[in-house]
Image (tube, rainbow, N blue to C red; front, side):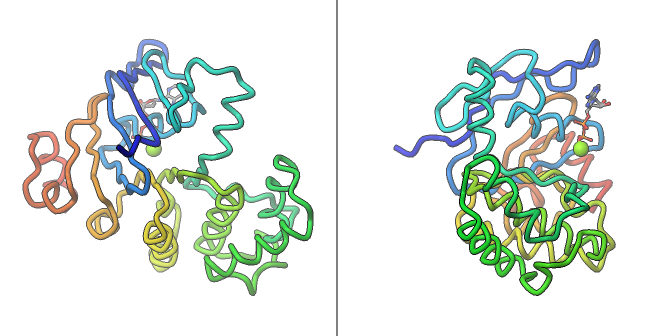
Length: 245
Ligand code: ADP
Ligand code: MG
């Protein structure tokens, strides 16, 4: 039987008196594309950050490839975190390095990959995101859509087993959203396991295997996108969809 790649059990997270995640239990299977949607402030970013322990859960467990992150030492957590690529709303590229250098940095520094191998791999990844002609450009000369595609290539350079995306297109001008979503769709088609927080409902409908609807500290509903958008099960989801669609 196939095992989950991420297992979340009774996850809860407080910030002081603010209980953001109350009790979340879900699995992500290898190759699955999960789209997490929900109102602003409902804890989607916090949830994503708990998956790779960028936030420490208040209680509960998060296991990655069978290892419970919440009980491991920092060294092992870091090793496992390297296998979880993360892409944020802001691109966070290093401004003083070229696109190519941005992509080569972590594989060389963290994994000890040699320069020639890292360069070759970086060019492959730039081809994958349609930016190999920008290898020597510096981040400040890129459009937002290009910068985000570089950020995706940079995350992929560590050969992650899963990719976590937190509203990767929210900061982009509308005409650049498509080029980033296309790259993400290609990645999904290649079998990458992905957890994507997004407000792009078209992407959710066409790419997600499952939609997870988060509100009030819980994942209120998990469903196929077809079912979720046509027959949402919970009143909370119906209400949310009626406001955005
Ligand atoms: P979403 O991504 O769904 O908009 P967030 O996970 O960013 O929601 O935030 C959920 C709640 O947690 C909000 O009330 C936010 O203010 C709070 N929160 C998030 N991060 C922190 C933090 N580092 N410290 C204190 N409160 C936080
Ligand atoms: Mg957020």
